[in-house]
Structures are given as structure tokens and as C-alpha cells.
Length: 93
Picture 1 (cartoon, rainbow, N blue to C red):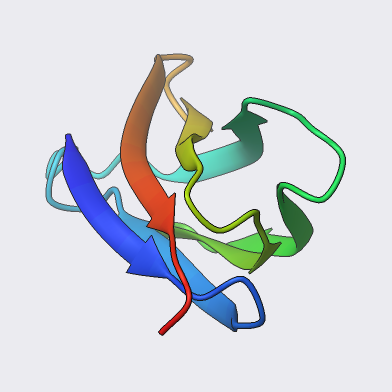
Picture 2 (cartoon, rainbow, N blue to C red):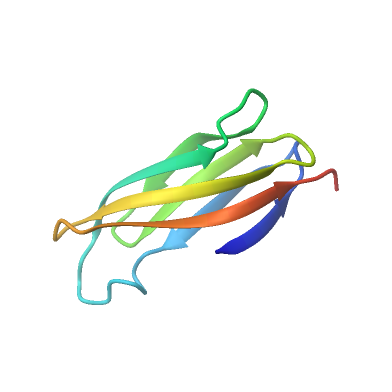
């Protein structure tokens, strides 16, 4: 699992490229994002999108000193469901 650092005031886009994991022609047909812990003032996903090979989320907020797990769960065109996560530490930069 990867680790990122984010300022609480930053609003950034983050993406997972699913094409490399599914080179056989499957496409992303659905994408959901989750943040743990879900807390007041914590990291939120105010916007997200996906195309046939990538899923993107806008990440905002967060409490300095806290660590969050951001998870993307996708459904592929052949019915497979997969997920990836990244760990994000929020700190004043």
C-alpha cells in the first residue's frame, strides 16, 4: 500500500490506473471511493469519475496529524470486483 502526504488545505486529484491490472480488455464500469476513518473535518471525496481504464477522485480536507485509508472499489466489464488503497497522512506543509 502506498503512502501519500497531503496538506489539510489542499484539494488534489488522485487516480488508480486499472488498465495495467486488467490487460485482457476488461473495462471499468463502476467505481466507488471510501475514506477511513470517516470523521468530521477528515478527508472527503467531493468528486469522482472513471473511464474505461482509470478511476479518479478529488481529495479534500483532513486533520493534521491524522492518517487515512483511501480505497477505490471497481467493477469490471466481466463482473470482477477489485479494490486498491492508499494511505494518506495529513500534515501542514
